[in-house]
Image 1 (cartoon, rainbow, N blue to C red):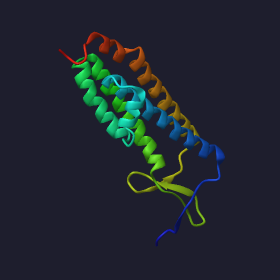
Image 2 (image 1 turned 135 degrees about the vertical axis):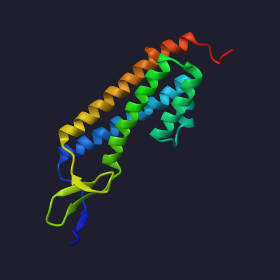
Image 3 (image 1 turned 180 degrees about the vertical axis):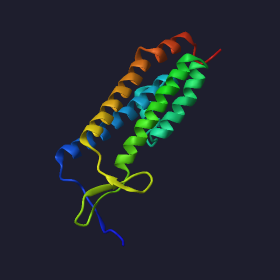
Length: 164
Protein backbone atom coordinates (compact mmCIF):
# COMPACT_ATOMS: atom_id res chain seq x y z
CA UNK A 1 0.00 0.00 0.00
CA UNK A 2 1.28 3.45 -0.92
CA UNK A 3 1.34 6.21 1.68
CA UNK A 4 -0.03 9.55 0.53
CA UNK A 5 2.45 12.37 1.08
CA UNK A 6 2.00 16.08 0.42
CA UNK A 7 4.47 18.96 0.58
CA UNK A 8 4.53 20.52 4.02
CA UNK A 9 6.02 23.47 5.85
CA UNK A 10 5.86 23.04 9.63
CA UNK A 11 3.92 25.55 11.73
CA UNK A 12 6.55 25.44 14.48
CA UNK A 13 8.10 28.92 14.39
CA UNK A 14 11.05 27.84 16.57
CA UNK A 15 11.83 24.99 14.18
CA UNK A 16 11.63 27.31 11.17
CA UNK A 17 13.78 29.91 12.91
CA UNK A 18 16.39 27.27 13.68
CA UNK A 19 16.46 26.14 10.05
CA UNK A 20 16.83 29.77 9.00
CA UNK A 21 19.73 30.21 11.41
CA UNK A 22 21.49 27.17 9.92
CA UNK A 23 21.03 28.63 6.42
CA UNK A 24 22.30 32.07 7.41
CA UNK A 25 25.29 30.71 9.34
CA UNK A 26 26.19 28.58 6.34
CA UNK A 27 26.19 31.63 4.10
CA UNK A 28 28.55 33.31 6.57
CA UNK A 29 30.84 30.29 6.17
CA UNK A 30 30.69 30.60 2.38
CA UNK A 31 31.63 34.27 2.67
CA UNK A 32 34.69 33.42 4.75
CA UNK A 33 35.63 30.74 2.20
CA UNK A 34 35.52 33.52 -0.42
CA UNK A 35 37.62 35.77 1.81
CA UNK A 36 40.12 32.93 2.25
CA UNK A 37 40.42 32.86 -1.55
CA UNK A 38 40.95 36.63 -1.42
CA UNK A 39 43.73 36.20 1.11
CA UNK A 40 45.48 33.32 -0.67
CA UNK A 41 45.25 34.95 -4.11
CA UNK A 42 46.08 38.48 -2.97
CA UNK A 43 42.82 39.92 -4.30
CA UNK A 44 40.66 42.80 -3.15
CA UNK A 45 37.42 41.71 -1.46
CA UNK A 46 35.26 42.77 -4.42
CA UNK A 47 37.51 40.86 -6.83
CA UNK A 48 37.21 37.67 -4.79
CA UNK A 49 33.44 38.07 -4.52
CA UNK A 50 33.07 38.69 -8.26
CA UNK A 51 35.43 35.84 -9.18
CA UNK A 52 33.46 33.35 -7.07
CA UNK A 53 29.96 34.82 -7.52
CA UNK A 54 28.42 31.61 -8.87
CA UNK A 55 30.59 29.10 -7.02
CA UNK A 56 29.06 26.84 -4.42
CA UNK A 57 30.71 25.57 -1.28
CA UNK A 58 32.41 22.67 -3.01
CA UNK A 59 33.95 24.82 -5.74
CA UNK A 60 35.17 27.28 -3.12
CA UNK A 61 36.88 24.52 -1.14
CA UNK A 62 38.51 23.12 -4.30
CA UNK A 63 39.86 26.54 -5.24
CA UNK A 64 41.16 27.13 -1.71
CA UNK A 65 43.01 23.80 -1.79
CA UNK A 66 44.61 24.70 -5.13
CA UNK A 67 45.64 28.19 -4.02
CA UNK A 68 46.84 26.97 -0.62
CA UNK A 69 49.17 24.40 -2.21
CA UNK A 70 50.68 27.17 -4.32
CA UNK A 71 50.78 29.82 -1.62
CA UNK A 72 51.50 27.84 1.54
CA UNK A 73 53.48 24.97 0.08
CA UNK A 74 53.61 21.54 1.69
CA UNK A 75 53.63 21.30 5.47
CA UNK A 76 51.68 21.91 8.64
CA UNK A 77 49.76 25.06 7.56
CA UNK A 78 48.46 23.34 4.42
CA UNK A 79 47.46 20.24 6.37
CA UNK A 80 45.70 22.32 9.02
CA UNK A 81 43.80 24.19 6.33
CA UNK A 82 42.86 20.94 4.60
CA UNK A 83 41.52 19.64 7.93
CA UNK A 84 39.40 22.79 8.32
CA UNK A 85 38.11 22.39 4.78
CA UNK A 86 37.05 18.83 5.57
CA UNK A 87 35.12 20.14 8.57
CA UNK A 88 33.52 22.69 6.22
CA UNK A 89 32.51 19.87 3.85
CA UNK A 90 30.84 17.91 6.62
CA UNK A 91 28.91 20.95 7.88
CA UNK A 92 27.81 21.74 4.33
CA UNK A 93 26.68 18.16 3.78
CA UNK A 94 24.57 18.30 6.94
CA UNK A 95 23.12 21.67 5.97
CA UNK A 96 22.35 20.43 2.46
CA UNK A 97 20.62 17.38 3.88
CA UNK A 98 18.23 19.76 5.64
CA UNK A 99 17.74 22.44 3.04
CA UNK A 100 17.81 20.52 -0.24
CA UNK A 101 15.43 17.72 0.68
CA UNK A 102 11.66 17.50 0.48
CA UNK A 103 9.73 18.22 3.64
CA UNK A 104 6.28 16.66 3.61
CA UNK A 105 3.45 15.26 5.66
CA UNK A 106 1.83 11.89 5.48
CA UNK A 107 -1.91 12.14 5.02
CA UNK A 108 -3.30 12.04 8.57
CA UNK A 109 0.24 11.50 9.84
CA UNK A 110 3.41 13.12 10.99
CA UNK A 111 5.57 15.67 9.21
CA UNK A 112 8.63 14.02 7.64
CA UNK A 113 11.50 14.82 5.33
CA UNK A 114 13.53 12.87 2.80
CA UNK A 115 17.06 11.98 3.81
CA UNK A 116 20.04 11.51 1.49
CA UNK A 117 19.03 7.86 0.97
CA UNK A 118 15.49 8.88 -0.09
CA UNK A 119 13.94 7.53 3.09
CA UNK A 120 11.26 9.43 4.97
CA UNK A 121 12.60 10.42 8.38
CA UNK A 122 11.28 12.59 11.24
CA UNK A 123 11.89 16.32 11.15
CA UNK A 124 15.09 17.45 12.88
CA UNK A 125 15.00 18.45 16.51
CA UNK A 126 15.52 22.11 17.34
CA UNK A 127 18.44 21.28 19.62
CA UNK A 128 20.18 19.47 16.74
CA UNK A 129 19.63 22.44 14.43
CA UNK A 130 20.99 24.82 17.06
CA UNK A 131 24.04 22.57 17.50
CA UNK A 132 24.65 22.62 13.73
CA UNK A 133 24.28 26.41 13.64
CA UNK A 134 26.77 26.77 16.51
CA UNK A 135 29.22 24.35 14.87
CA UNK A 136 28.99 26.33 11.63
CA UNK A 137 29.51 29.63 13.46
CA UNK A 138 32.52 28.24 15.33
CA UNK A 139 34.05 26.86 12.14
CA UNK A 140 33.52 30.18 10.37
CA UNK A 141 35.25 32.03 13.21
CA UNK A 142 38.13 29.52 13.31
CA UNK A 143 38.79 29.82 9.58
CA UNK A 144 38.53 33.60 9.62
CA UNK A 145 40.91 33.87 12.58
CA UNK A 146 43.41 31.55 10.87
CA UNK A 147 43.22 33.73 7.77
CA UNK A 148 43.56 37.08 9.52
CA UNK A 149 45.99 36.43 12.37
CA UNK A 150 46.52 32.70 12.75
CA UNK A 151 48.38 29.94 10.98
CA UNK A 152 47.40 30.97 7.42
CA UNK A 153 48.51 34.55 7.99
CA UNK A 154 51.74 33.41 9.64
CA UNK A 155 52.56 30.92 6.87
CA UNK A 156 51.92 33.50 4.17
CA UNK A 157 54.19 36.01 5.90
CA UNK A 158 57.03 33.47 5.74
CA UNK A 159 56.66 32.83 2.00
CA UNK A 160 57.10 35.30 -0.82
CA UNK A 161 54.39 35.58 -3.50
CA UNK A 162 54.89 34.81 -6.25
CA UNK A 163 57.58 32.28 -5.41
CA UNK A 164 60.97 33.28 -6.72
